[in-house]
Length: 173
Image (cartoon, rainbow, N blue to C red; front, side, top):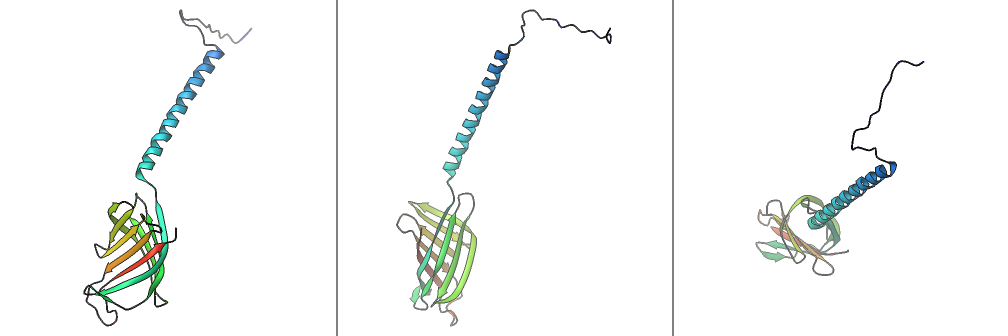
């Protein structure tokens, strides 16, 4: 008895079925090939990342400032505070300043569009606000130094008797 269905398995001449050992060997070859491709991909990605560089953050204290009127130094304030600069090859540089004049808080400022103007021997020069602001970070010295120079324009009115200023400081890291 039965359901009336029959099937027949025929062997093709010159073809023999794979054994379990042959199947296992093929799986191992595929796995090894997969591992080789993955390892090469990791190496290529690492090499590309290394060539592009990584983000660097520097921070420190403002140790002084110079104010100018028509290019001449003007003794106005004692400057203190802190600064941060983040350099990332994938984005414009970022700067934050927290500035005190004669011990009183004057300015908390952040800017995230500094464009690299030059870089040589660990000295980075950035420009922002067109060319009105310049940040210079010198990492070739220990500790690194920082300066922030701004051309304000508008003459030297009595409320701020300067038309440009430079803050400078030293890195903590």
